Length: 555
Ligand code: NOJ
Image (cartoon, rainbow, N blue to C red):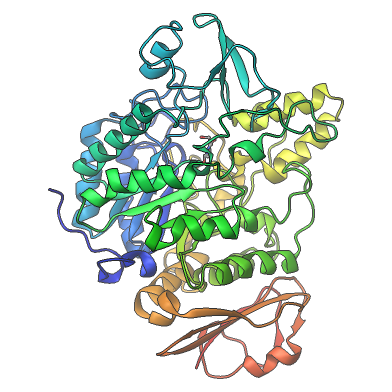
């Protein structure tokens, strides 16, 4: 049995994660110990002092399973091993043991909506219409009109089966058919196998897509689009809650230790979020929803629109209020699918440090479990991608070619990519100012951001005013102050043009957060009366907030 791990400032038992902070590593880009230009498990292990110093409780690693890497590991060809790019299973065991020794937990990414087309299940399923796994994936003689999330159609023809298979992402990521009980049992077996090995839970990739409308009806085609928008038939589908409850019974109910089950539930609603995370329903502990990271999307993500604090405040408050009496929020700005938050909702020029700290304060002071994505803690920014040749991500590359073929100017498409493409969040972690940013001694698989000479971990460690020191303070605050972990949430203004202000209240006291999301001074107006008590975060005073100033008062 794995060693007992407390984490989360020593809390155990149901809801232990309320005072916990999760740190996400994208293994490809975190630390490369063998100099081949790609991050690896040994690199992660060599940087655990950093995580321990920050105070994080849980490490989530994006997939390290064997994979053809059509989507950087979100296309798994073997769920019971480690891809040689990242190391070995023995090294993963060592990582688990070392994390546990330090009181931290490990959460694996579990990609179970789809597999790689090179997974033996799909190889068998696609071999003939008579094989035993013929219904493990979605096969049809004729495709419907659905488009995939990554451009192009959601169906590809397979010679071996003389039929089409469904893939909501790339054609190398066929969707598993969760209607088939054998598929579900096979997924549960994988989960138990990893839990028995010592991992402490899962972040389940696109888990609100696992149940499709079995009729697979044609979908409406939006203006200017070639394929149908399948969301209505696949998001939060008819049996998703039943499947997750079954998974809980078959997997989690069999373990008597503190585990974490996080679902990535893109484009889900507050109403569905309540269902997924209501402890009484025993489905998921928390969900990663998207609403607050789509504030700057137009009709679709490449159609970028200006940031609006009112929209952000509205969506964050809706989730805080919606999950106040049941369920639980996860709190995040960045991950490997998002451009860097400082470049989106902050100011990555003159006010980079101030805005990065403000964003951190606003996130960590909400009710929920914060997720820090590698590089957030030093205020990493978007990358100045000059041409499509510098971009790796399959979603961005597919979109670029589709958009240019449809007649858009390449430079306009590049402008969208610079703002929105996922590679912004995937450039190597900036450890120091050396040519490889301390990430690698070789040639990095994706270029290092040129600003690593100034923005890096080494430069921020000993500076008490750095973004890094600020993250450390916020994490400690969550561990030490029950108001942060357990207090309720009240929005203090729904109309201030620059300020996001809220109160957290608990039997032990109150915290008030006042944050100026702009590069101009903000007159607090009626909110000025909240400027009372001990200043826990920030150094100013008075009824006017400086550009990008955030204050936290305790009363
Ligand atoms: C969500 C993952 O976070 C993303 O990186 C991936 O491309 C899709 N799911 C498909 O697995």
